[in-house]
Length: 186
Image 1 (cartoon, one colour):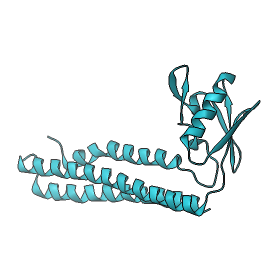
Image 2 (cartoon, rainbow, N blue to C red; image 1 turned 180 degrees about the vertical axis):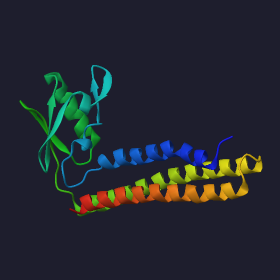
Image 3 (cartoon, rainbow, N blue to C red; image 1 turned 90 degrees about the horizontal axis):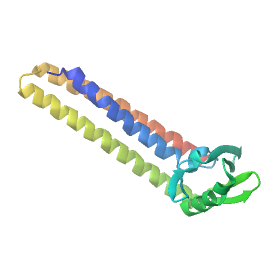
Image 4 (cartoon, rainbow, N blue to C red; image 1 turned 45 degrees about the horizontal axis):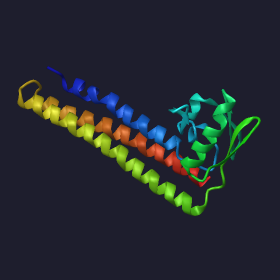
Protein backbone atom coordinates (compact mmCIF):
# COMPACT_ATOMS: atom_id res chain seq x y z
CA UNK A 1 0.00 0.00 0.00
CA UNK A 2 1.98 3.03 -1.21
CA UNK A 3 1.55 6.47 0.34
CA UNK A 4 0.91 9.47 -1.87
CA UNK A 5 4.50 10.62 -1.25
CA UNK A 6 5.85 7.25 -2.42
CA UNK A 7 3.76 7.49 -5.59
CA UNK A 8 5.19 10.94 -6.31
CA UNK A 9 8.74 9.83 -5.48
CA UNK A 10 8.40 6.85 -7.81
CA UNK A 11 8.35 9.11 -10.90
CA UNK A 12 11.38 11.22 -9.92
CA UNK A 13 13.91 8.88 -11.61
CA UNK A 14 11.90 9.01 -14.84
CA UNK A 15 11.69 12.80 -14.71
CA UNK A 16 15.44 12.96 -14.14
CA UNK A 17 16.04 10.66 -17.13
CA UNK A 18 13.86 12.92 -19.30
CA UNK A 19 15.82 16.05 -18.36
CA UNK A 20 19.16 14.23 -18.74
CA UNK A 21 18.12 13.07 -22.21
CA UNK A 22 17.20 16.64 -23.14
CA UNK A 23 20.54 17.91 -21.81
CA UNK A 24 22.44 15.40 -23.96
CA UNK A 25 20.38 16.33 -26.99
CA UNK A 26 21.00 20.03 -26.43
CA UNK A 27 24.74 19.53 -26.01
CA UNK A 28 24.91 18.04 -29.49
CA UNK A 29 23.22 21.07 -31.08
CA UNK A 30 25.82 23.31 -32.60
CA UNK A 31 26.18 26.87 -31.38
CA UNK A 32 28.77 29.45 -32.30
CA UNK A 33 31.37 27.78 -30.06
CA UNK A 34 33.31 24.56 -30.51
CA UNK A 35 32.55 21.91 -27.88
CA UNK A 36 33.49 18.21 -27.81
CA UNK A 37 29.81 17.31 -27.33
CA UNK A 38 29.22 18.24 -30.99
CA UNK A 39 31.16 15.25 -32.27
CA UNK A 40 31.76 12.84 -29.38
CA UNK A 41 28.73 10.65 -30.12
CA UNK A 42 29.04 10.56 -33.91
CA UNK A 43 29.13 6.88 -34.87
CA UNK A 44 32.23 5.78 -36.80
CA UNK A 45 32.51 2.48 -38.62
CA UNK A 46 35.74 0.76 -37.57
CA UNK A 47 36.47 -2.79 -38.72
CA UNK A 48 32.76 -3.45 -39.38
CA UNK A 49 31.72 -2.16 -35.97
CA UNK A 50 30.17 1.22 -35.07
CA UNK A 51 31.79 3.19 -32.26
CA UNK A 52 31.37 6.78 -31.01
CA UNK A 53 34.22 9.21 -31.69
CA UNK A 54 34.87 9.61 -27.95
CA UNK A 55 36.00 5.96 -27.80
CA UNK A 56 38.45 6.40 -30.67
CA UNK A 57 40.45 9.40 -29.50
CA UNK A 58 40.79 12.44 -27.28
CA UNK A 59 38.72 15.46 -28.29
CA UNK A 60 40.12 18.88 -27.44
CA UNK A 61 39.19 22.47 -28.20
CA UNK A 62 41.78 24.30 -30.31
CA UNK A 63 39.88 27.60 -30.41
CA UNK A 64 36.29 28.88 -30.58
CA UNK A 65 35.84 27.44 -34.09
CA UNK A 66 38.04 24.32 -34.05
CA UNK A 67 38.26 20.93 -32.36
CA UNK A 68 41.03 18.37 -32.58
CA UNK A 69 40.51 14.62 -32.33
CA UNK A 70 43.77 12.91 -31.45
CA UNK A 71 43.13 9.31 -32.43
CA UNK A 72 44.34 6.38 -30.34
CA UNK A 73 45.30 4.69 -33.60
CA UNK A 74 46.26 6.42 -36.88
CA UNK A 75 44.01 4.03 -38.82
CA UNK A 76 40.96 5.71 -37.18
CA UNK A 77 41.61 9.11 -38.77
CA UNK A 78 40.01 8.60 -42.17
CA UNK A 79 36.92 6.74 -40.87
CA UNK A 80 36.39 9.53 -38.32
CA UNK A 81 36.75 12.19 -41.02
CA UNK A 82 34.25 10.34 -43.22
CA UNK A 83 31.73 9.96 -40.35
CA UNK A 84 32.00 13.63 -39.38
CA UNK A 85 31.48 14.81 -42.95
CA UNK A 86 28.49 12.45 -43.41
CA UNK A 87 26.98 13.66 -40.14
CA UNK A 88 26.37 17.03 -41.74
CA UNK A 89 25.68 20.14 -39.65
CA UNK A 90 27.96 22.17 -41.93
CA UNK A 91 31.01 20.90 -40.09
CA UNK A 92 34.20 20.62 -42.11
CA UNK A 93 37.22 18.54 -41.19
CA UNK A 94 40.68 17.63 -42.34
CA UNK A 95 43.30 15.05 -41.42
CA UNK A 96 46.89 15.94 -40.63
CA UNK A 97 49.74 14.50 -38.54
CA UNK A 98 48.11 15.71 -35.28
CA UNK A 99 44.75 14.05 -35.91
CA UNK A 100 41.38 15.10 -37.28
CA UNK A 101 40.72 18.83 -37.18
CA UNK A 102 37.07 19.88 -37.04
CA UNK A 103 36.28 23.35 -38.43
CA UNK A 104 33.03 25.05 -37.50
CA UNK A 105 31.95 27.79 -39.88
CA UNK A 106 30.07 30.74 -38.36
CA UNK A 107 26.34 30.16 -37.98
CA UNK A 108 24.19 31.78 -40.64
CA UNK A 109 20.98 33.54 -39.60
CA UNK A 110 18.95 30.84 -41.42
CA UNK A 111 20.72 28.07 -39.53
CA UNK A 112 20.19 29.92 -36.23
CA UNK A 113 16.44 30.16 -36.97
CA UNK A 114 16.36 26.45 -37.82
CA UNK A 115 18.19 25.56 -34.61
CA UNK A 116 15.78 27.67 -32.57
CA UNK A 117 12.91 25.66 -34.11
CA UNK A 118 14.71 22.45 -33.10
CA UNK A 119 15.03 23.82 -29.55
CA UNK A 120 11.30 24.55 -29.41
CA UNK A 121 10.48 21.05 -30.63
CA UNK A 122 12.88 19.53 -28.10
CA UNK A 123 11.30 21.55 -25.30
CA UNK A 124 7.81 20.42 -26.28
CA UNK A 125 8.87 16.76 -26.53
CA UNK A 126 10.47 16.87 -23.07
CA UNK A 127 7.42 18.54 -21.54
CA UNK A 128 5.18 15.95 -23.19
CA UNK A 129 7.17 13.16 -21.51
CA UNK A 130 6.94 14.98 -18.16
CA UNK A 131 3.15 15.34 -18.58
CA UNK A 132 2.85 11.62 -19.33
CA UNK A 133 4.58 10.73 -16.06
CA UNK A 134 2.40 13.24 -14.20
CA UNK A 135 -0.74 11.67 -15.67
CA UNK A 136 0.43 8.17 -14.74
CA UNK A 137 1.14 9.22 -11.14
CA UNK A 138 -2.22 11.02 -10.89
CA UNK A 139 -4.01 7.92 -12.19
CA UNK A 140 -2.22 5.82 -9.58
CA UNK A 141 -3.23 8.26 -6.83
CA UNK A 142 -6.87 8.13 -7.94
CA UNK A 143 -6.82 4.33 -8.16
CA UNK A 144 -5.28 3.97 -4.69
CA UNK A 145 -7.91 6.34 -3.27
CA UNK A 146 -10.76 4.42 -4.96
CA UNK A 147 -9.41 1.16 -3.53
CA UNK A 148 -9.29 2.71 -0.06
CA UNK A 149 -5.50 2.59 0.24
CA UNK A 150 -5.14 6.35 0.68
CA UNK A 151 -7.54 8.94 2.04
CA UNK A 152 -9.23 11.47 -0.21
CA UNK A 153 -7.46 14.43 1.39
CA UNK A 154 -4.12 12.60 0.84
CA UNK A 155 -5.06 12.19 -2.81
CA UNK A 156 -5.41 15.97 -3.11
CA UNK A 157 -2.21 16.57 -1.12
CA UNK A 158 -0.61 14.18 -3.59
CA UNK A 159 -2.03 16.14 -6.51
CA UNK A 160 -0.55 19.35 -5.10
CA UNK A 161 2.84 17.73 -4.46
CA UNK A 162 2.80 16.16 -7.89
CA UNK A 163 2.07 19.48 -9.60
CA UNK A 164 4.83 21.18 -7.61
CA UNK A 165 7.30 18.51 -8.75
CA UNK A 166 6.17 18.78 -12.37
CA UNK A 167 6.46 22.59 -12.26
CA UNK A 168 10.01 22.20 -10.93
CA UNK A 169 11.02 19.92 -13.83
CA UNK A 170 9.28 22.10 -16.41
CA UNK A 171 11.27 25.07 -15.07
CA UNK A 172 14.50 23.05 -15.45
CA UNK A 173 13.56 22.30 -19.06
CA UNK A 174 12.76 25.95 -19.78
CA UNK A 175 16.06 27.06 -18.23
CA UNK A 176 18.03 24.55 -20.34
CA UNK A 177 16.33 25.80 -23.51
CA UNK A 178 16.89 29.48 -22.58
CA UNK A 179 20.58 28.83 -21.94
CA UNK A 180 20.97 27.08 -25.29
CA UNK A 181 19.14 29.90 -27.08
CA UNK A 182 21.49 32.39 -25.43
CA UNK A 183 24.48 30.38 -26.71
CA UNK A 184 22.97 30.45 -30.22
CA UNK A 185 22.64 34.22 -30.12
CA UNK A 186 26.24 34.82 -29.02
